[in-house]
Length: 92
Image (cartoon, rainbow, N blue to C red; front, side):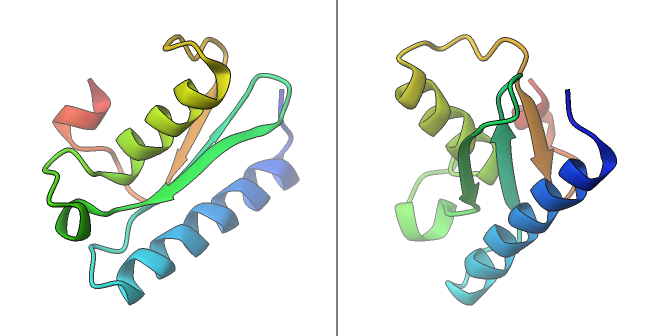
């Protein structure tokens, strides 16, 4: 479980990802996925343009990276920090 200061720190990282995405010509969206223990599992910025991937949204990219890191598609107990409300695809 995280506290307010942790939430602020994770959102700051998501904002860093959003700024990096914007600098790369993408929509300024960032995401950070944090495990139940507070460990950052993955972070990503939007990249559908540079990757030619319509599913290259920050949320999806962070979840994919975390699943690869864990070797499991189930991200039980994880918290996703995103710089805007997820679209219908990302909200699942």
